[in-house]
Amino acid sequence: MKKYRIGILGLGNVGRGTYDVMTDNADLIKQRLGADYEIVRALEINPQAIERTGIDPAKVTDNADDIIKAEDIDIVVESLGGIEPSTTWMLTAMEHGKSVVTPNKAAVAANFQKLMATSKENDVLFRFEACVGGGIPCLTSILEPLSGNDFLQVSGILNGTTNYILSKMYDEGLDYDVILKDAQEKGFAEADPTADVEGIDCANKLSILISLCFGKYIPPMDIPRTGITGVDKAQIEAARAAGNKIKLLSYASLDENGEVDCYVKPVELPLSHPLSGVNNEYNAIYITGNMVDDVMLYGKGAGPHPTGSAIAGDIISIMREYNR
Ligand code: HSE
Image (cartoon, rainbow, N blue to C red; front, side, top):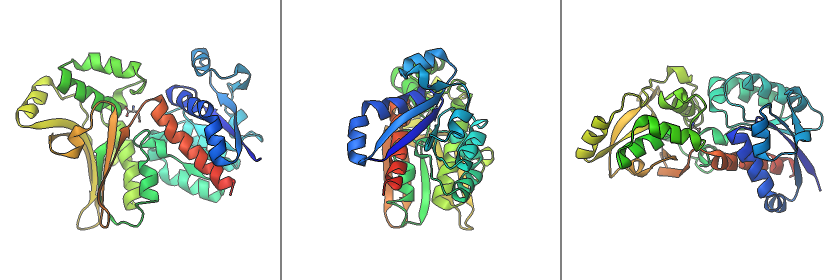
């Protein structure tokens, strides 16, 4: 039976979640796949992260080259976060013949074209489902079952932390700071929550959705963006009185000239809108295609295990390709 060898860069919340999925469900996955695999090595320097993951410390390295250039690794999972050194390490891994899986939306959005081109040049696979919508299989849906459509619009609630904060402000009247701390403890918010609350994380995800739906690359920094730091209790209550809810909406469509019209900003959605029922750390991606009409994909958009589930799906899809 063929055996595939996996290396993980980073055992933070997402790396640990991936490790859990790939070890807790190993028997089931191997049976479905008809092949064997092993997590051979992980890069991590934080002793608490190593202990919390439960990985054999002998498999842990502090040198990325032991994974991205290693002879005995077939698939690299990059779960470090941040644009660099993540991008360089993903490119190096591809140049050394490894397929790459990442949930790193900042790196993918910033370097989408380079990463795609390098994977093609080196004849390796590059998968990034977990970059958008955590555990929701939205990118694969756009690339495969929905790919017969001319996409008219893509929108959604793409950030678990801000949706959690806005939901708790609306439902429980809690203060922003208290809820943010809670979201960080639950592992949704980034270590530095600026990217979440300022809409930068949403802009990264929307940039990826625009590339896949419309075949146009819009750098995240060019997407007009407003975060939720200016949303206060009075606005939440005014929206409620009008029969609406404030949601951080990410939106993109093509105008009559074929140009992308896009934004990330807090908007008041009527309670009848399907996206207004998406609460807490849940995300939803609302896609309109010229043939399928409206499709909404819903699920947990953040957290170690939902995100680990999407990464595991990408790893399995690569192993399935290799195992044909
Ligand atoms: N910080 C992100 C969020 C994690 O809250 O949605 C998932 O991308």
